[in-house]
Image (cartoon, rainbow, N blue to C red; front, side, top):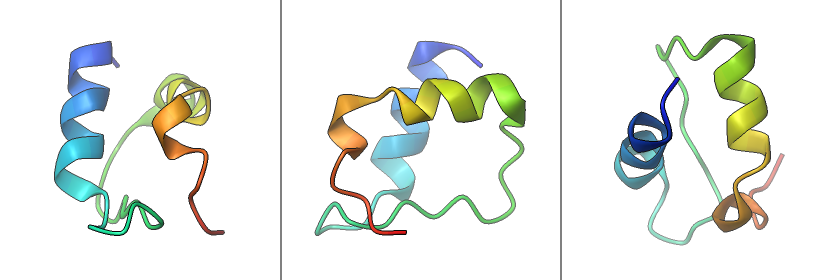
Length: 47
């Protein structure tokens, strides 16, 4: 998954308060999941 695509996914699916990233019906595979885990802007997500 490319960095641009991940950035678009984050922009489109991150809640306004920055605490929830909805990945419902998203196919990101293991590589995409690892890249998302490394994104600094997602450090405040709730489990």
